[in-house]
Image (cartoon, rainbow, N blue to C red; front, side):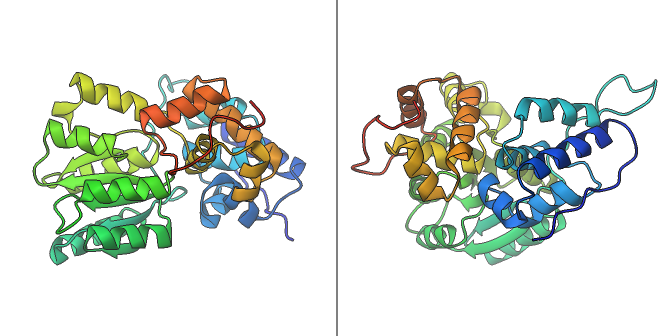
Length: 323
């Protein structure tokens, strides 16, 4: 298996980041891109670009690859932050972090029953550098397409015939909590926003939003944050729901947390997700750091009470190794 070559970048903070990443990659045994992508919960293209591209990756993409290689997340976060800062005597403040770039494309399913709006959104996503892996025109079809394609995010129209977008979001999130959902509605209200968040969606977007706002909302949600209309963000009950949802867990971390909530042991999680035991325990440490919950029972309680994940009916209790 060929070793991924280290990209050539000018001396400085970016070079230090590249050198450190390549060192961790070699120390991990120079695993194939497919293995890194699987263990990090990203696409193979994303994993390869993080390792081989001379462009500075986004933090979510870099974090996923470093996690897959069992690297020190805190160290790489500091290296990445330094590499983002402009170099030279006039560089006083770091630039605003881009919501996404070509090194972190989003895989989307678009659910919309209006053909013209659907076509416009698909074209917008392609122009933003993202990939539409499926489309659907009803809630029932959305569930089927989502579970077939396992996208990063679903842009879900709420006003569908039959099953509503929120109902479809709840079913999809119950089946795979790693799939994020952004509800799109012509009538955004505080009540609908709260209902969507409680159903497991990560945001609500008005159909009146312009192209830039749509792209920003999608990329905000994929980063692990919550997007709601500005006029509802300060409503206390909505603010509480956002707090619960905003732990910024990666898709692979969400899968591990789902398994914990089902009562699986570390060994069983490794077997289900095709990960090494060491990698599972590394993900658990990352989850504990992000949520502030150190005990396994606390992780299960947080997962269920906050709606981050929804254990399947009849799932096991709070037991499991690796507490």
